Image (tube, rainbow, N blue to C red; front, side, top):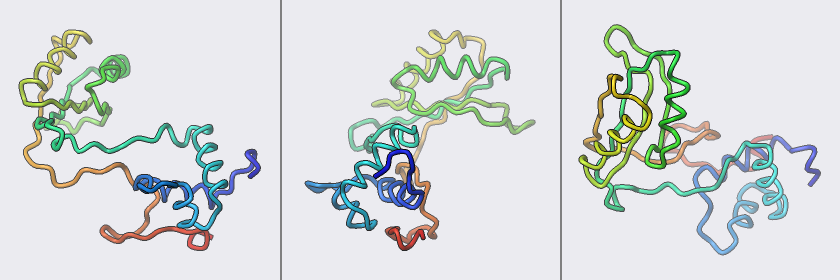
Length: 179
């Protein structure tokens, strides 16, 4: 495969194939190749190119944190001055226990919060302790915030970007589907 020219059909097929996770088989790239109609070599080279181009940051797993004993899940919402969001978001994002950190628009007058961080813990007290650490380490003592604890999980999965099918419909995309 010419690494200078990336087949856009292969690119989309690869992203669609891996966004559900790698197949748990001895040769996952071969399985993907069979699924999308390319060779195993093309799949491996294509994934390498996606990573080199920055389209794929890394391969990882979606951990079911509740099954591992992490029962508390807190979305911490912060009301931060607009001119401080960038710096404070970067400060919070450096902590390994912050799994998400997003700026979102305020919904005034009812919702003044504009920065959202997700913190997981074994229990609520641990989430509170971690949030207090954020407050101290990032200088947030005067910043209004709330911890919104989850009460029930309806769905947890990794992001899905390539699927254009209605919810609940699974379809493998091949070279022919995308042409």
